Length: 265
Image (tube, rainbow, N blue to C red; front, side, top):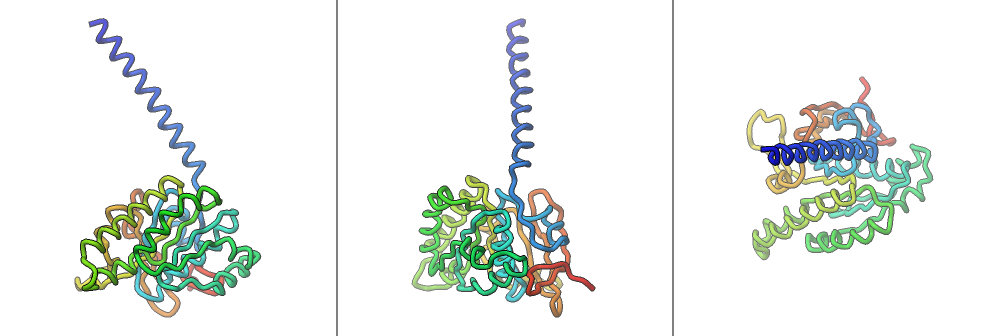
């Protein structure tokens, strides 16, 4: 009996020490987190203060709701912290002139801000997977903190409707891409932004009018999901539809030549 009590006591003491280590690690991680602001206080509030390192955010919405604008803006915002960006462009929508405009409006050196972004134009999902597999070395040898893929499901959408490519092959490649993105985000504590193309939601009166193509696969890997929806004129809703810790919420923002800003009545 005495032996049993001693063993239980040892286990209890070990558990206390173990919990202290875990709590200490959590507190240390909080201080080590990198946060990028969007430029809009309301936008920031809805995602817990900004975009956090170690998290991948799926940003989806119809055309002209600001998905690529968010990518451009964050590419400039990260320059303030002296971090570098990997920008994988699958839609040929990266615009150097927009980066320069945003940099100048923030009083940054526009050419230095542009050189801070490593841009690759991606022509297929196989090319995207190859590029992702090359990023380990690039991230290690550079101060990369932001990974952007605009958009993550462009080629999956194309390939799944291509009769020359089996659905199983398209899905397998896509899942490998998502797994690699998740792995890179966690290992290197990146802030990862994944824009996503959408398909219509046919449920009448639905709040979310579109869903990302391949949402069932995205949901398996990523928990932070943001829905952008156009309201009228220059008013756009940002709707946090899913999050690991934050409640569902939405606010209005606007896009100006200076970037994302709070909408002012």
